[in-house]
Image (tube, rainbow, N blue to C red; front, side, top):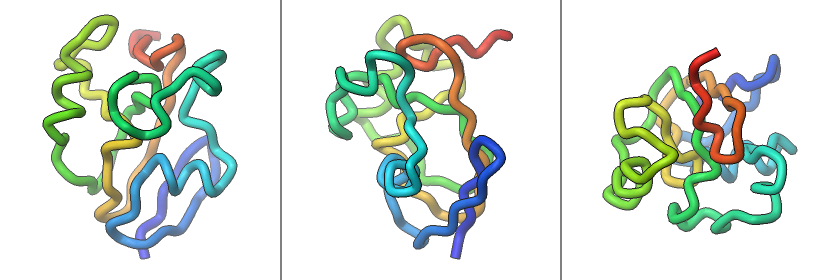
Length: 106
């Protein structure tokens, strides 16, 4: 059973689980500020659930690649949309600052 590490917590989940759903069920928000209320509810169209991931996950979907190619996102940032990402093994998740979680430079 994969383990998702985020904010000092470890959350076990089923292989093949949707990352946004795993985090949400554990009480971890993938949204910043107003994006908590103003998001697409997992459809991949808003881009507010962008996170940095280190670990085993599926390849980006076409919807995810399209959304991450539109500003303020940058397709070269390495960020992923939690709502479009499937957990395949152990991973670490990091949420960055900004409405879309896109401020990766710190």
